[in-house]
Length: 149
Image (cartoon, rainbow, N blue to C red; front, top):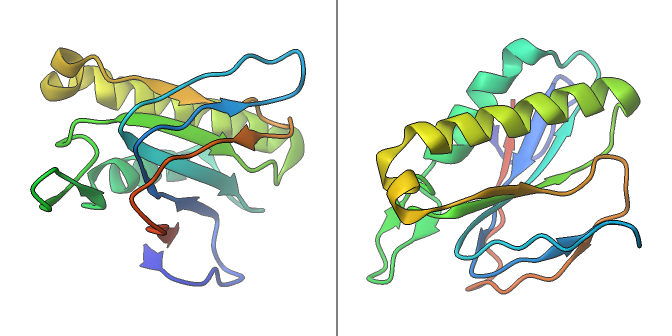
């Protein structure tokens, strides 16, 4: 796992800014989904990526301490606890769709298994893979981190 530019050997990447509020919208037939305080994860998969990579991606993205509490302490989105908004970057066609769907499911399972998250009622929302995504985001600043796998 590296944080920085994406080398040619990368199989997947996630970008995770902290958000205060983020409602994305896909095409005209899609509906707005909305999250509150938490994290926005832009996820893409490169040639050679497979489902064995997904648990590492989910574990890293949900446990890295990028979220800031009201008193300025950096914690994971699980410890915040906060909502997750997953924005798919359609990079591999149908193969990417399968990986995206599994990624979303793993994120949902991790939040459901975390007592802080279930007590707080946090949610995982996601855009529609392959559709244009419209995103409206309120944030504390330009805190976007690139994590490659």
